[in-house]
Image (cartoon, rainbow, N blue to C red; front, top):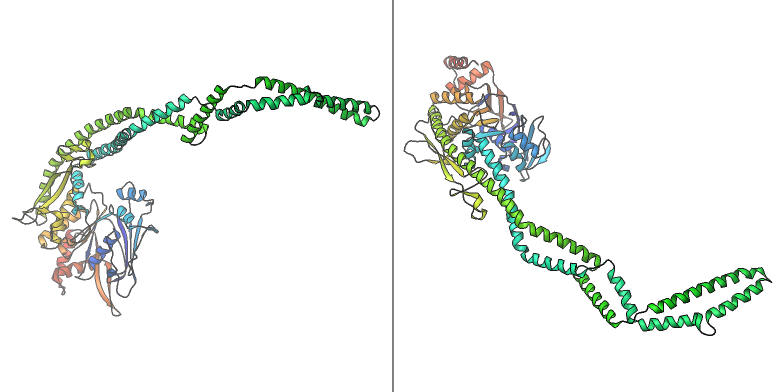
Length: 568
């Protein structure tokens, strides 16, 4: 519900603030006083396009601000929550229009975008007028109106949920099928790679061990000769190292009897002799184990070449070869499971398709029945609003078929959408003998507003928008019809906050709240004022609307009588 509206430097308004309340609020005043300017300001707050030409002369910026009371669990509250705004204390929407074209939007004091503002505010208020924003004029909104009227929102929601459940499954199925097609060659490659790595029977660090064995086999003769010479020099030949070392040890022991400082050295030489003797024995064993085998050398070199080839193919080391083999096996398992996974997903899709087809047919049948009732009811409402003879029709057409979407989005020559298989247009012929035309093509602001009013009255208990604003609803109607329209607005105000601009006292008399908009000249500048009217001031305004410039006692009495009839 719109609680407060503040306008600064907008058109001929310099600074204006007004508080609104529940029920029916009427705005009256002479032509050109600025009534429609106020509606335009609200329209901009709701996300309408702004232009620098709207800024008051000699000013650089215009500021528009509106405070809405937003009940929890409403579409507006949910939309705001999704955008990260807390509406516990209401929604404060502010727009700043600059002559340089750099306009700014604020929501609850935080800089926002036009898209964020429009997403939230489209659920807060609806303006009905010849040039104003009005969701009921949009063909894409007509199906929602029909479903609201027919009490089909739950079934429509079930269709939408089933549709949204199908979408990711179909995308998943198509992805799996594409993978299966693309990976047929991949599978052959993985099978070859897994077999190649598995057959190689690679052991950790095998390449290092083989390289050492190759060196021994390749240089066996040199190793044998060199190790043999070392044994001879240490132990075997005349004047061997051990022979001389033994003599040195004995000499030091003898000298140690003279000088004990040499005894430890003698012991160390003796220890070194034992160590060298052990080395000589180990070298004898080493000589016995040296292998002269050209066939084994060839086998080792072939094995090394194989391992080198595998390392080059699989990223440089035996560890990487083994790791790649494990990954290839896992990928091969996944690919081998693809047909089963595709079959599983397709089974779920088929089940959902059967379910959504049943619901779509049921929803379409119920819509057609609801459309007949709605058409008759709208025509009845329009007759009571002074538009007798008006024809109203809900025309059905198939949802378009998307050939690329596949058979699961096709039913009875219609495409399946989140809203079902139907699209509808509201068609109207306001005058006898005219052809039916789309609602949006109605030229007359008065006719359009009354058609909207009729739909609003029918949908009153189901409409989610809190505030309804009517401009030009009295265009082209007389006193008798105006009173009927006024009663209709009064009835509508039981379910919504209703704000209405009117030039007719027969409609103004029904307002629970009444504001007079006037235009005054101050210091050579025109400015608009808005004044709440009560009791006698309201009587005088109704009298002005009844009698024009000159207000007589008769018109005042008539105005009081009108007020008395409404209990005001």
